[in-house]
Image 1 (tube, rainbow, N blue to C red):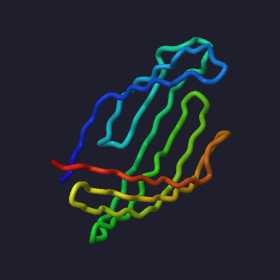
Image 2: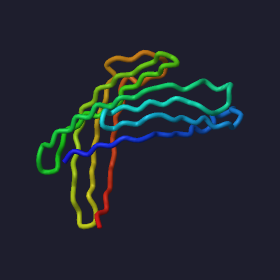
Image 3: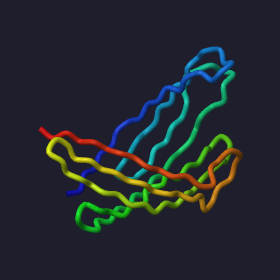
Length: 136
């Protein structure tokens, strides 16, 4: 079964230490069908840097059988204000386990940045998670 959708995304950033306490508000389109999100700031203190960034998340998930799956879900980013960008690639493994009370999804995905430009961007990282679903 293929599920798609789209909508809007909104985020509120908390003030940084030593900031005046003003919050920054971001708003932009969110289209999971195409794996992309765009955020731009439109409210907040005028002394703070503007935000204008985009993210693209290609999803590749292959079922391996017996609840196991391979995955690649790294998020590519581009900052229109600073021209910073990061393109990581990941390859991970996950397992879905059914219990009497929940469906448990465990995964780990090491990711390496194959192309990046800008200060403070990661060279590599590990994306891992646990998802619990409680059916009726």
